[in-house]
Length: 310
Image 1 (cartoon, one colour):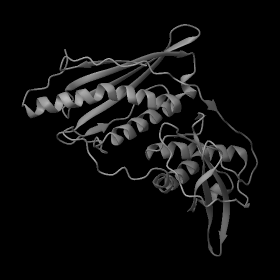
Image 2: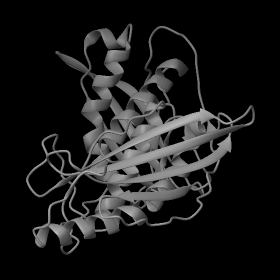
Image 3: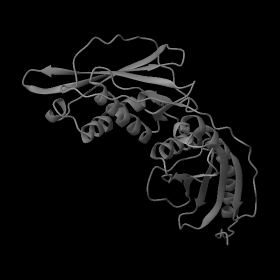
Image 4: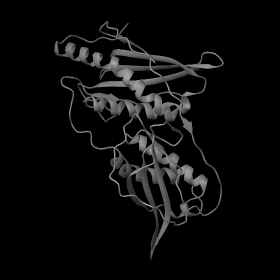
């Protein structure tokens, strides 16, 4: 992935070529009425190990229900985890990916609504169970007979915060000295999964570098807005060109600088490659972003106006 930085400060920062790796896609389907049946789930008691975002987590279909329900639950959970800063997908994985497995069953209570019990287990690339957690949720009665897309989303949204706190430890409050806070906006592009995975990877990268991330739609005074856009278009019958642009702006949307990245990949390959590619893309973007943040802060302290590039 080739980087080019266009800045209001007149500075260009070259980047390096970043390889984009392929990953595998998994899916399941099926159709039977009652989705859940209780079964024994073997648990391990090994201590939990944190998964680096360079590996990512592949959410496997839930065991216990019929296949199409298990797959729908996994898809909803992967999407919900991404919203909570976990680099997760139910479609793609690589050789370093950890697996998030689960078993779901119905638990009946006297004179109380039936509970959905979800046992989660995190599996290392070597096949070792490194963590486990049980989450209980009470779904609407209709879920047990005719589950719908909205049910899966509700369950995932209710369950994801607890699972996410288990998967992602607190990153602390260490801040980069002298750099402005950054509000990371949604990333635009043709692939919703890719947009979300890249955004969460960049978020984790910013935090790991000690840059304060503003978690708000309103940009506070002194913070900058970072917005990404992905464009994938065919170069020829065998090759696509992937272009990614990161726009850094101040609170009044005056442009500070733009980081452009581009690379060629096999046609149609990016849909299955985001878990592998996102850490490389984020690292490359940071090569150009950090100098922009430093230059902005120097000019702000020096009371020099920052103007939009013409």
